Length: 426
Image (tube, rainbow, N blue to C red):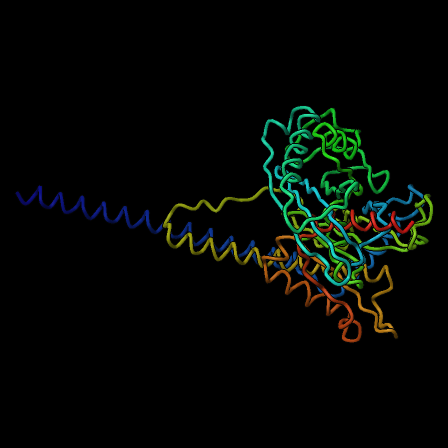
């Protein structure tokens, strides 16, 4: 009986040794894998480092691209589109009355209304409602999509309650935030260039989106007219200007990024229309397209390929390490993004001559919106600290970053009010 017992013991020893060897190999592989990950992270940190000297170069390039994008000569070329928005009248706070807005930027849209009471009362009352667009309407006909939107708008208008007052015989006016690529032809018209975000209604391409909405509202028997067409960045600028007359630019920092600012019309060579009433025009920069040899691009920016860390072995330890790695990578990327955003804002200040001390102690206010800025505190801290460093001790106190509140929706309604006031004054 000893032989079988000895054989069994030997088998156990061999099995234990084999298991130990397997575990050792696994741990070695894991150690090698994490060492490689650490090396990649260190390399990413190095590639994403953006010293102040480089940020100044980025800001100079931004200002130069802004000038090129505003140029009359297309052959100069610019990575910035510098789109003329036709918005030459921003809210002043004097506006009074009931105004609506429609914010269409994806698979959901929002409808809202505001009752304005002028300088003393400002926004007396505000109501909004969100609506999801059925998926089948995103690929059918334009009439079906806009009829659905107009029907929701009609229902919302019908719910006007106490606190909202429209003078008898007055047509309701609506600001339309449309966050898809359009070629704008006036403050209240623009043709669709292409759909994004899952929409694919081919017959709409080349059509005036405002005319489509106005026609749908007529079919729904709504006595309402679109008076302004804007994107979310321009709406944010308008909302900021309503509460602070020193606002000169707006920046969106979310899943996408963009900036808009107020430019003197005589510095827009490509503007061929009549001079604006107040001499200024809002420019939509489309700065997400900005390119420069000074940008710190990494291999990860150039490709979307990512190497899997193969989680699953030793779940507890691996999850902790992976979580820490994700935090570290996020911080590296956020710091780079925040510093580049600061350089972009500094570039706008430079273009407008707001990068030097002013004897009049003029304030320069930039309103910022978007989930990355609002909900990722490290990002906003990095951005604001970097901007202060670029501006220097003498100028930094006069440049203020302010968070925006519901710019894309309320801003559109305020612009509708501003243009209504403009027409009354004229």
